[in-house]
Every structure is written in C-alpha cells, then in structure tokens.
Length: 111
Image (tube, rainbow, N blue to C red; front, side, top):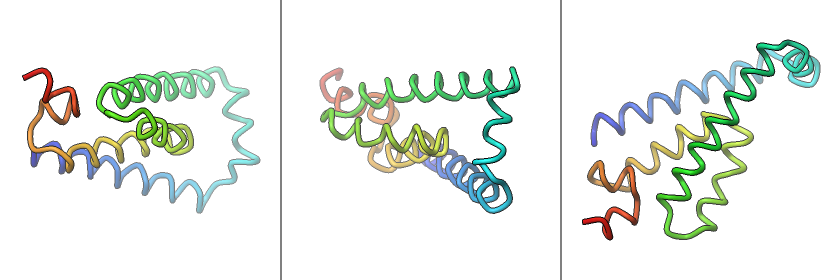
C-alpha cells in the first residue's frame, strides 16, 4: 500500500500545483470560451468528464453510505482529476490492503 499511497499523493500534489498555477496565471472567464471553440478543447472536456463519471462509479461502489459518495461529486466536477486523485489518496490511507482500497466496505463481504 505504500507505493499506492505515495503515487496517489504525488498525483494529488501535481494536480493541485497545476490548478494553482493556472489560477494564478490564467483568466478562465476569458480563456474558458476558447476551449469550447476548439474541437480538441471540447474533446478534452468530454474526456475529463467521462473519466470523472468512471471514478464516481468506483466511489459509489466503494462507499457504504451514498451521501459520502455524493459529497465527493462536487469536488470531482470542480477540481477534475485533482479531486479524483485526492479521493484515491484518502482511500489509500483509509485501508491496509489492495482489495479494501479497490472495493471499500465490499471487500469485507467478498472475503
């Protein structure tokens, strides 16, 4: 689990650093419309939100309480894969083995 923890924390830090740099140096209100005008910009957004939907499906599978899974969704939507990396890091620190990391509470019933 140490490797998974290091990896997910590293990805979280990379994503949050990239978000911070983008906030500090860019103007989303002005530049965001350029993304939607560009076919590859639209494709990138589709790719992002398909990935977010897949990760959210994993969160629903892992979490025993629906409200916990739903509480993560706004972070995923706003932070993109910065939020998903954070969730994976939190999940890695809440478990001691790979089945629990992947399945959450369902790992107990699977064994």
